[in-house]
Image (tube, rainbow, N blue to C red; front, side, top):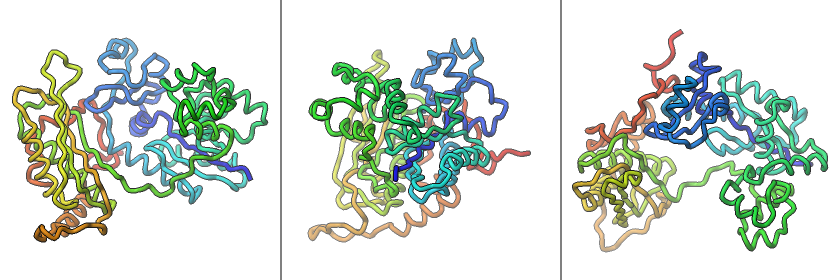
Length: 420
């Protein structure tokens, strides 16, 4: 039986989330900006037609925006995460075998599903009807071909949002792959496509037919797996259960430059709280912490300084209070007056399950704050993140992300629920 693996992808996801609660934006060119309103990270079809490119700095688009009335909005991650959970919940009902690949993509195994075409359109219709988010469905025997099928479903109106690669004849498959540039293949991209062009690989069909031994020798096993996936041999399986993180990074670019140590410590304390909450959520603890500071590398007229320090913890821990003290110690050692810091962050590594811990005969036993951390997590889960926090958090707002164009948290904050 041919495997029927569907990739369901939300169209222009961030923009679509905004339009659910702003129907007046249906035909308006809209873009969503990255942290601190820096670059374009999501575009409506109308904005794409006007030439707005993904990743383009917003200040370069302002003249075009004024000319065509393009609306720019700040990223509203709380809204997007909640809408994503709703869409993924709908898709999960169609198969017990599925993988949430990203905030707007999900692989769903529909192998053996009767009336597959009707079910695919029903899945798409239900997502739109229940959440307002339009999706496209691409079906193939492997993840890579499902991705390509989804690409076709988005680009060609005749597909009406659903395209099944498995339904094509051998000649149709060859013709389709010959018209898809190799850089559109999952995992290839622009830089690798330039290297592949030196070996005569310009399309997905060229990659499928390329000499396997040469590909492996020149580009490694990953590109060989991609080729075999194009040949309908599954090499990348569904990850139905996400593995525990082996490294946790929490960092952020500041809304404005920071020059004072207390402000940096306030930011790092927030990063530690978020990182440790993720540690506890997966039942792990960390044995190493790293802290880094960055000035603005785009401002060459300013003095540059990018220090980084790491230290092994006396014992593995997920205690926000203990980790925060080490972050403060490292930051204080690195801090120098006269620099304008634009970004900071922490890295927790050497992560292991809390059930695995090597004691030290020479170190006295330390009282654990585990019950306190459990209470903190439960309160923040019930009343919202940041409801209960360490005293070193929240004293300063200078470093907070700039979100001058942010929409309300329509689905995650009582005060922002739309009134009808």
